Length: 150
Image (cartoon, rainbow, N blue to C red; front, side, top):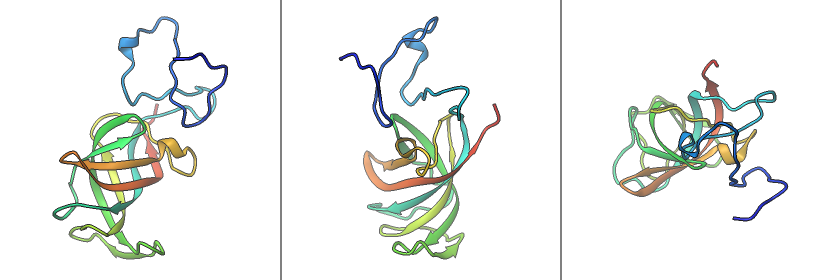
């Protein structure tokens, strides 16, 4: 590891915090400026998802693992909307399922605390891969985040 005087968005860095043990920090933790758009836990978020390679069907209540920034976390697919892959136009609200090749807008509910952001605001915190059975079955970008009150 080499010392840096400056880091940029998307860089993975290590740093020390006074009176805090390395054991208090886990993968997926996010640090930020408490006085300027501080990182907050997401209650839920809306994402645009493309189903790449899923053997069956994906329906509401599906709860795969999301790999988002450095933190893998289970998230439940709650509200579903099928969209056109090319134009983004909504095709169907509340479809029964998605299959490989489909694109969707999905409301997602994390199973544990996680900090995510919209892709347009903070790209490294706003993109993810959906994993199931150790395979990437979908990818997505976060459009909006409903943050928990501090």
